[in-house]
Length: 110
Image (cartoon, rainbow, N blue to C red; front, side, top):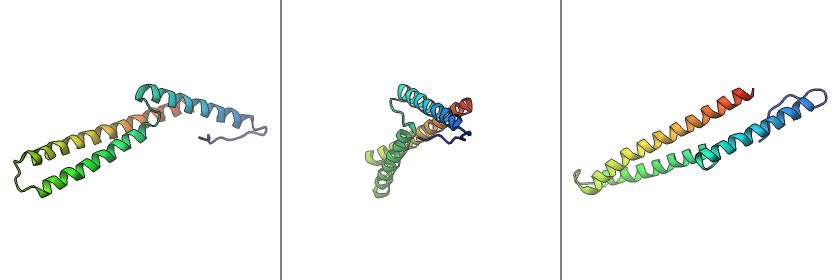
């Protein structure tokens, strides 16, 4: 990850800012690893969203093929589809929280 910096006549200003950027990135990764078990929180959350979408497609297929709305399979798919919506909302909140945390860290750094 390269820091976007302005260099002074000697380049020292750019090197200091670049070093500070690397230290900040390392701190964020360590914090995320300690908090979430992995530094790439957005990747985890988007993976959860993709899994939820795949499960919703399966649930929609079960409901579409159903001839009896009260069958165990159809009711299970309807309940599961609601759970998938909740999982997706939770993953979206995780992405928002991660973005907000990073934004605040960058504000503190700036």
